[in-house]
Image 1 (cartoon, rainbow, N blue to C red):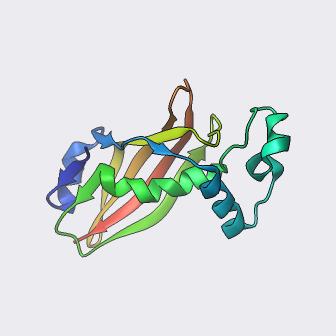
Image 2 (image 1 turned 120 degrees about the vertical axis):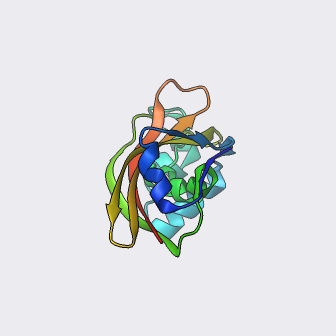
Amino acid sequence: MGTVFKAPKDLLSNIGAQLGQTDWFEITQERINQFAEATGDYQWIHIDEEQAKQGPFGATIAHGYLTLSLTNMFLPEIISVENISMGINYGVNKVRFPAPVPSGSKVRFSAMLQDVTEIPGGVQAVIVITAEVEGSEKPACVVESVTRYLD
């Protein structure tokens, strides 16, 4: 499903490579409610199913940051770098949420290796991760994730 690199320096010669995609994953109302509880974001569009039916999407939707947070769960399915002492989530350069993720819908994640630079002790990779919603023309989330892979 994903791409395996034998060492961090192997990423340097693969800039622009498509890394793979995950299986479909259902975004349940329970997960949305748990995210609301964890973050304190109780906006009605996420948790009030009755009011959300009358809202712009006809149902509750996942928090954008819930979708973003799932990239960390699925990134290891898409890319694996062997022979490292550590992988560090270094941050993000850019995040966009072009389309909502309705409760009960399915998402999957794909990634492309946008850039790689050498850093002391390893490499820093910029990986563009796209969250696709089943049946939607627009992606739900596009993020430029920055990861450091240390020797």
